[in-house]
Length: 120
Image (cartoon, rainbow, N blue to C red; front, side, top):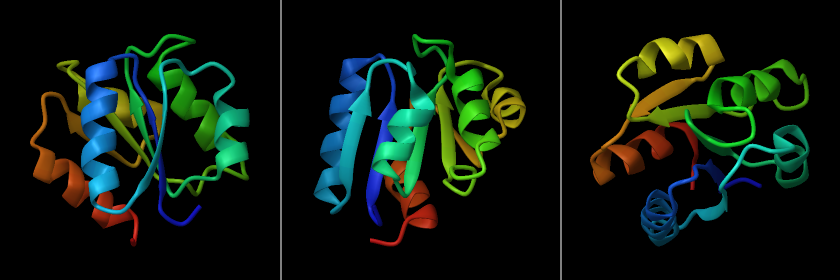
């Protein structure tokens, strides 16, 4: 979907805040608390953008992003890696993510990053 964003994070507060802010900006948001069956989930929803947490249950963020990026039908979807991990930049490169956002983050930075990848 043209303005749909998927967020994979096991922190329900993060999911709530991000959903509220992004929906207020006009985006459709779907959230997941694990990365189980990530390729099928992403394929079914065909989002414009994905946020992926590092410590997500179901295999972790690095593996989930690698699965998405290795699928020729999904590799074009931008993935923003977000985490409080000190080595987030290194992890995002290892995962093959398109960008990263360190937690805690400024909500304006979240919105601006989304706008850089998704036209609303």
